[in-house]
Image (cartoon, rainbow, N blue to C red; front, side, top):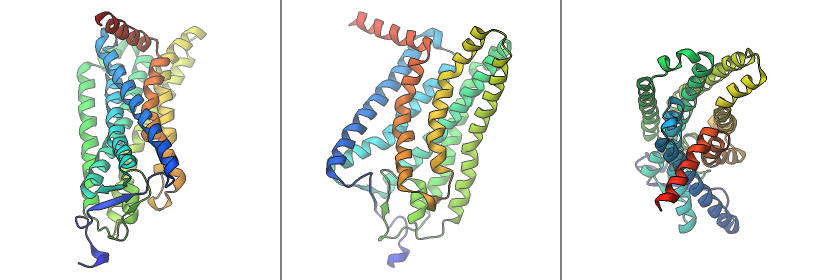
Length: 313
């Protein structure tokens, strides 16, 4: 087989260039990523346990938040442990199957994040704009059905991308990925075969990715209009406080991700790597703090959880 026509299965591994080649900076980054990962897992696990242990939080909004916290744990676990192992071992290679597997779960969990944030925005819209009909519209059956649909759609979308990526030709002399994980954009960039089908499908996926953001924008426009119609200032403040945590998470998430991926693959730059760290590493870590510090119900639930733990010990 010729060097320029080596197929995907012939390339046994890729080389992740990481974030820096400086050994001192790599040591600093190792401890930063390790601490961030531990805080992310601990914080999101605490959110899940607090919601599960407090009957007052067994509502649609917190049901979606539980799923979001679980997805954030999975999202970072898909990326960070491999990065930490690379730092310890001093090798930045990743096998071809591991690379595609990492890409599959990255796309799947990223889509789940957008779907869940949209579902939470819809929940807040109904709660504020149609409060008397809330429990008739947002039923437990609807929440479970929506969640199952979101997980299924995310998995199928990611499967299509992975299968299309698997059919590409990769050359043995172009195995370097300018990132710390297997990014679909950069894999298409180093492919030796025609990637037009992949690019077209990716553009279609971008539409599916942006659609939930449009739902979020419309929901909050309706929420803002409803809040402004409330005559009293304390009433407006109380109504807005019920969705302030979710809105903060949405701003952080979309503020980092849209600037990176709503662009052609060949325009990906080193500066974008810094932005991807924000949404792949920092945002999942911030979510528990945003919800616990800006939400009185979560504060009480976490306090009760620690109180029961201290009594039992």
